[in-house]
Image 1: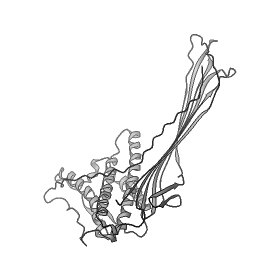
Image 2: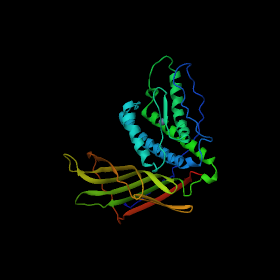
Image 3: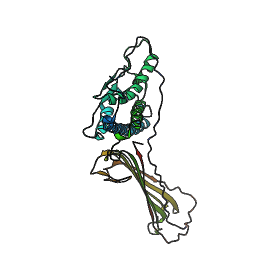
Image 4: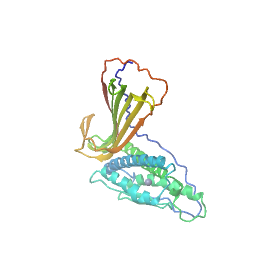
Length: 375
Ligand SMILES: [Zn+2]
């Protein structure tokens, strides 16, 4: 038998492009005399947004992206829970209100540029919208988000005529509710894009403003043959290891100031396959006994960063990105398969030939895709 080292690497990296989708809602069916009215912002100027609102809009655009990234991360956790439980994770108000929303709000705060105007909006389970915005411009942006909830809520209520208070979200799973939030924040982003594109060039920020999608994958693998050892009755085998590390980051840049939110996944696999000779019970024959020993370690990190853990340097139309690797934590999975030796006709060992070589290959790939908020 000829043992030879083999190494294989697979690389996949893809810039995360945030798809902008525009969905036009039909007007919500309303039950006559039932349910709250759609929220209206108090008009303060025409147009609603001008140069004075640009920084607020870009700041909100960054914050919206942070919310989407956090909801995406949370959805991955919810799906993992559903897979583990074997049933859907239905909407739970206390989980939503006491855990999910504060987590998302904390992520949004990390992307908030100091000095910008903050605004808040919400629509409760009874379709009642409240928007608290110091400016008319931001109010119109938040209204675009809240209207999506209002429309969903009213549609649900109109299908249940005569019922009293019932949070419309109880009809869905946590994943659906979180996905609706992503849709709401994406609606805000679309609205902001539209407002900025219609503004005069003089409102344009002086420095780079936009988003950078960064993706990096490192894959290494190696395979080492285990030579036969007559004394230990080893016929041969293979030690193999593989490691992959994927880091994606969405970098929001406002007027040259960068915020990052990043996901890291590291997977290390180790395995041994060994074939040895074992003695059969009550039998002097030797048998071939394959044996597998595998372990998988998965580490993950998710977080937000500002300088100095993360840096973007801009020079005209070019930029460079540098990171400090976030701390990862994870789980270890180990399996061991010691196949019992079956007794039967005597085994004839095959001849084993050298030489034995070690193979290791590392591939690193970085990819960035940038998109200026202002086109
Ligand atoms: Zn919302």
